[in-house]
Picture 1 (cartoon, rainbow, N blue to C red):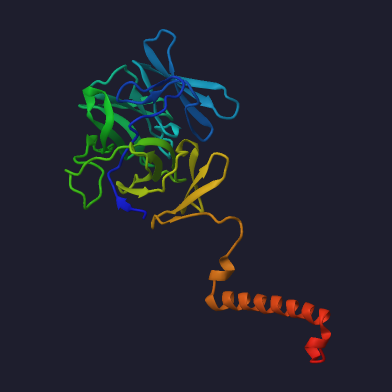
Picture 2: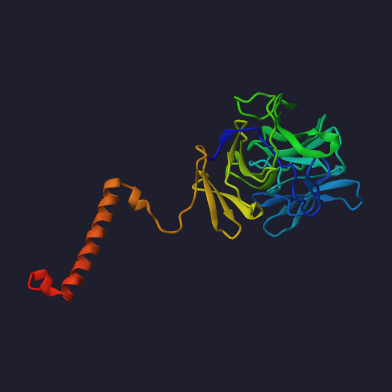
Length: 321
């Protein structure tokens, strides 16, 4: 039976490294690559030729021409998640970068950048071991993963924290169900893929537990609430992709080939399975109408069969045989 619960907001315990991605510290970041885009502009973090800084480069998505660049001392990169490079708010006004230093270290450092004017707004330094998880559409809340076994290099245990970007402070507690205690055991999993709603409010991530069971983590970045939806076992999770349909009302899990696996109704979190291609809607649309149609088909088939028997043995039908 499917179990639905409000859950601790969880994050990837391990992420597949992308080209030029640094995944050896608490911050999973990527340099070079395709970067993140908003409208006609794309932003890419690039190592300087001297190796002593980072250039945040503005690139046109139309003709790929390179525009202005922001030179930042130190090594920084775009946050790297199961969906690739992230860190840009939905409104395109805030970009978060993470430190690309080698090894787990504290404090964890982030840069908040105004990409439209290519300037650093502020630096965030937090005692402990944190990574980027998500950003609310207006960048008022930054979601961070806090690893609880920092120096041991153990990234399998973690909680999700919320950082208020307006007051510049890490909020107490963790993102959890309102009826869960702070002592409840944190969840663990490996992020396989993720997708985000059109408005940037909802972030859906498909995870695989260490025991193998899959689940979807749905994070409402506006209300600071998370839900977990347990899914049936699937040994091919590496080939599953998440997408949204019906104006973001249906979360679809399908194979990379496009073949459907299952659907999740957003809000009720009910799981359903796509049909085999034959529509049975007319059967269940109305009990009377569906049954009447079935009965009519049965009578028609019976009459056709009876007609064939009369043609073959007319004497029997007339009582002459």
